[in-house]
Length: 114
Image (cartoon, rainbow, N blue to C red):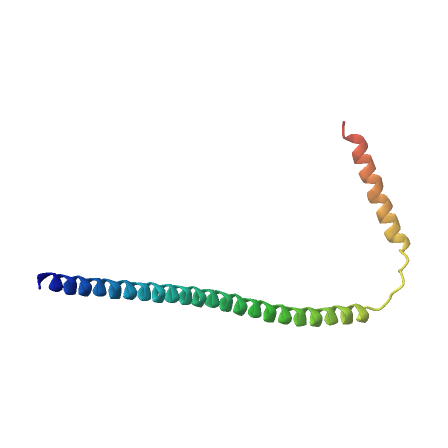
């Protein structure tokens, strides 16, 4: 009779160990799934942030391009509004002043020792 009780207790103990092992395996799988889900969530967050930043940069570039196009139009209009003038011939008085300045500069250069 004692042996039967030992077999029953041993069998119950083995059964409890098997159940404990099964639960441990389930817990391990659930933990792995949770970690994988967290990693995917973190990856999605990073991708989302990068996408938002890329969209913001694209919007800024579009605005800058529109501003550059407007500036280009303004520059073209200002260039077109400049009248084409012919060169005005220098007067004799201006020519004499320029010659005098040039002569004084040459004289000063000749006086300065090397």
